[in-house]
Image (cartoon, rainbow, N blue to C red; front, side):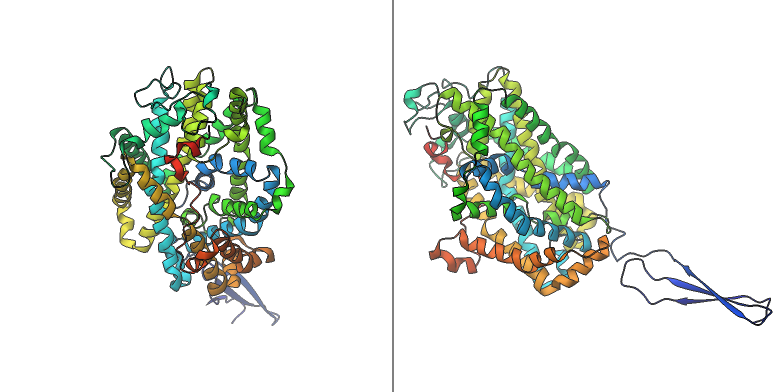
Length: 566
């Protein structure tokens, strides 16, 4: 090279494993007149490339859309009707010890694992198993479970909608026993002579069983009858709401959750402010928080805390994987897991103050022990709570507010389940991407047609069967195999490298130990703990049905004395 000449040599650098794509080095050689040669190098960054498929996949409009969607899915009806009762029954504040313990060692690690799995692979519950194809069956399993749950979960929402429509009246229809649907056994709480009579039922109880469900018009599962037009209409409205929330993907569902995920918190706060002003409310809250550490010696308390954690966070339904797959690749999924799982647990605890303020009021008003009115499941939200609201001034307004809360609690959880099915299948069968709107319509209409069995006169029999066989031990085994597949087959180290690629640092040793040892052991021991010893051989085959998903409705709905013990 002469002193006046200048040349540029470009050499490609070795391809890196990250998503930044190849870099180029520009080498400039300059020879000075004094014979000394100087070398100058600069990096030339070409247009960045991303993994195949990343550019084509839509993402959440805003980060808050994703957070609200996850919170809305995880915070469902069980946070209101299940956790407060478990806390009261199992030692009050002492129940928080095993609850928080299992939250830390199993709940959060599994929650984090699913968010990271979906975000890195950017596919639904089945497609993510391209990392270890032998486990793809697990993906299809959780998709099927989500679809199965939708067959009856939407029916619960339709009940809430039916109650909402019924609340737009001067006098709520579950106040008196002089209605056409009432039986001779109907008796008001005020009639203290009926408190010990197991054959008596309150107006609110009979309204739910006889006016809404029409159980009295069916002799059993072999006598279903036709779908009742009132509940069918409500179910159709629910399906329509779900379709137009999901048909355009996360661009539409991400906006809907701004209402469905935030409304319950507004309503819970309003109900709490009203509840604490009622006579007896403080006694109810004290009973809710009373600490009995001796209850921690009972293994059943620990088992119920473990099952509540497992099901309330919503792991194993493919929803967290589907939601996180629409995140930006560099999104901090670790922070999201901590925030959303913590909000879920805090919501459960907060709702207990609302529930027990009203239960304390009912106990005081009718001069009965709190355990006579403290219930969980459908008996709480469709019988006892409406009964309490009916005694308040402006009862119709409070009923409307309460059932709007139930409606929004159910809708965003149902949206999550549907999105799990839709995303999981269209990611696996790529040709469906161009027909998402039609495929979404197919899914929701199919769900509607099967759900019609649950809104017949004998629909409660079908509902109970679906509820008991939908997502019990199968979910536990699904999450167990998922954890084993990631931790032992794909490898914790490789999975940790994937997370580092996304958020810039590897998970700590604590998380890696939980994924590899603690969480799988927790899930396996839990499956055995909730199963009779004589049926342990069924656990190995995944056939046990001892526990049902968190949306469980009390299966003895056909036994009024066990729902509402008066």
